[in-house]
Structures are given as C-alpha cells and as structure tokens.
Image (cartoon, rainbow, N blue to C red; front, top):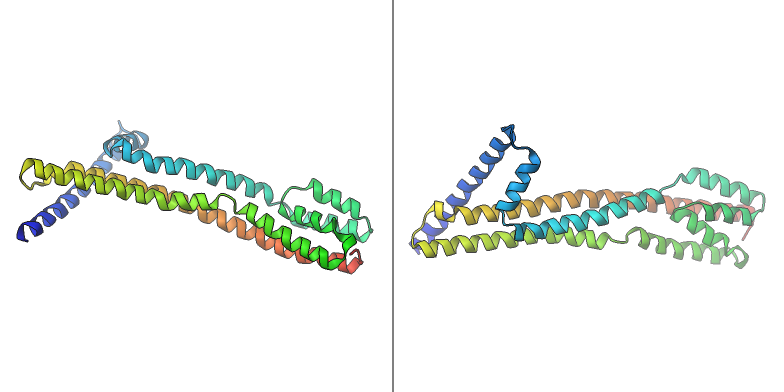
Length: 244
C-alpha cells in the first residue's frame, strides 16, 4: 500500500513538474524571435503524438465545416422582414394575391417561404391557412437546425479523444516505470507530456466549436422569433382584408 501511495505521489509530482515545464517552454517559445505561434503549435502537435492529436484535429475540421455551412445558410436566411411584410401587405391590400406570392417566391429565407405556403391556400379558408403556416414553420425550423447534432457530437467527442490520449500516455508512463524497475519523474515525464498535450488540444477544440455552436443557436432563435412574429402579422393581414 505504501508503494502504491508513493507511486501515485510520484506520478502527481511528475505531472505537475511536466506541466510547469510545458508552460515554461511555451513562454520561452513565445518570447523567442525565431519561433512563431504556428511553429510552436506544430512542434507540440508532433510531441503530443500525431496519431492521438490527429483525432481531435479531425473533429475540429469537420465541426468547423458544419459551423461555416450553418453560418452561411443562416446569414442568407435572415432577410429584411420589414420590407418583405410591407410589400406583401401592399399587394394583399390591393387584393393581388398573385403578386404577393411572386414577392414571396422571389425572396429567400424561411419567412417568405412560410407566407408563400399560406398564400397558396387562401382559397381553402383561414383555418387551413393557419395550419399550413404552422406546419410549414415547423419544417423550416427543422431545416434551420440541420447539422447541429453533428456539431454537438464533435464538441463531446473532441475532449473524449483527448482524454483517450491521456489514458494512453499514462499507460505508457507505467510501462516505462515497469521497464525501468524504478520510480522516477524523468522516466514518466514523456508519457505524461503526451497525456497533457492531447487533453489540452481536445479541450481547445471543444471550446472553439462550443463558441460557434452557441452563436449558431442564438442566430436560429432570432430567426425563429421573426418567423413566429411575422406569421401572426401575416394572418392578421389576411383576416383584415378578408382574403381567406
């Protein structure tokens, strides 16, 4: 039992010492004029074992791809709803449903699509229009949230893969101790360094993707709020003009 406690204490001290060494090396590298930030990242990527470091990197690349796709899609979907509603209201006030449909069809985004579906059912009564707007609004909401589950997966997977590298590094450290037949911080430092670097990299990837994820969710919530608000206004316009 004493040997076990001694081993754990030695491992803890070795991990602390290795952390200090890694931080000191990072500070020295940042201050050195001959090595920039990109070179430093490349060096730590190699030192952290490229096999285990590549797994969180793949999560970062795929996660960013989904994030960029969502940001572009949501930016295109977020149009000037005030001008759209004003144009549609003017056409409906003039009893020109076809013109209102053309305006919605020519405008990108979920709000215009929802109103187009509603205008297409005006001959079936206001109740059918409301159901059509509500149902198609749910469809558009699902399209806005497309790909979020994959981003969530990569956010959860990146630190797990980093911890996986940590476990492998600790196993390597114990193997080195077993091979040497002695407990020494120098012997286990290499394995612990791999463990620390993979964990740090996995957490960094998760943090980056989490920031993008929250931004995307906030963007979706804003568009959904506009959808709901404009859907109510749209129905009121139809009822006011007795179109449906």
